[in-house]
Image (cartoon, rainbow, N blue to C red; front, side, top):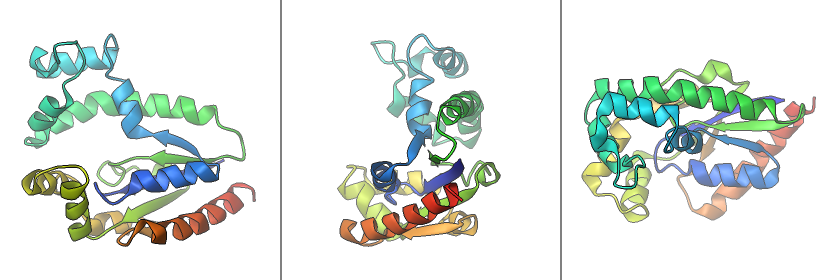
Length: 199
């Protein structure tokens, strides 16, 4: 089994790279998706978040009000650390379960947005970074995700810098250009990963 950490700044195009890798045969473990699952209603994770942040972070239907929680934690590093201390161990445990279920010759892609920030590179055989310039990230967040420029800049500033991400990369996928330029790069990366997993 080859364990690959996949990361990239917000708006760099990591989701598209994940989608392509899965289409070639990779097993995807999506930390963001798991992070949502571990705080669904009636989970110990949601109970711990409510205990730490109060009932105000719940929507009327009892689910986590993500925008509300986001506005609290992205404005205060200590509150973000509190949230991470609740969610990260739960995500780690579930990720390990999913990885254990993959085959011995599988290429397991761990899609981890905060891989750099949480110094997780040593957990993987290889780290792949999806890279785009800050200007490209900003444009995508505003144009494609409907964020204001200030919101987008705040999200970007809350993450590791481009230089910090590139410093831990074993492989870099340049996603500054159009979508058509991405696929051949990802296929080439996949071929190398598959070869390593089977050697």
